[in-house]
Length: 226
Image (cartoon, rainbow, N blue to C red):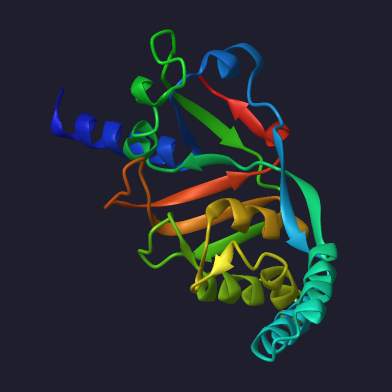
């Protein structure tokens, strides 16, 4: 193979990987049989964040002043604001084959002795509302709230709606960071179909390589290529 053929082959690989997303699975038996399927989960949220914050302050005062009966009344009120919602669990992809491959170790599977680890290649229909987040080399294991806020504002989401969503999950959005799962919930609540976290450090063990992570909420958008 001459140098021109080698260059053309490498260019072809680069173009191919630009169109393809990779999903590493520690056990791909179900995916191979049925494709990606919709999975849901439930989470708690605060239905009235403003009132919830007021109650936290009132409970602190009641505790400091020794008003025990009032404290427990306020605690009951705060508890009534905690509701439950169902959401679509994100399906995660990477534009980097090596990064996605770190997630296909059979030792990570629950039934690892019978598991079938695999690297799934797929095309994703992104003809929808895509939230693009510039991660600026931050870790995917705790995404900075300010980065998410900036991306939502850039996507023309009302700032009041943004803060409302953040406040709905006080135990998951704290210390200036949020989990990827929480990001997925908030994005769905705000009407996004896909989230692209660009230039993020991600792998099963943490990661030192920048890549793009794509979070897909509807498996019908995914076409498996292998």
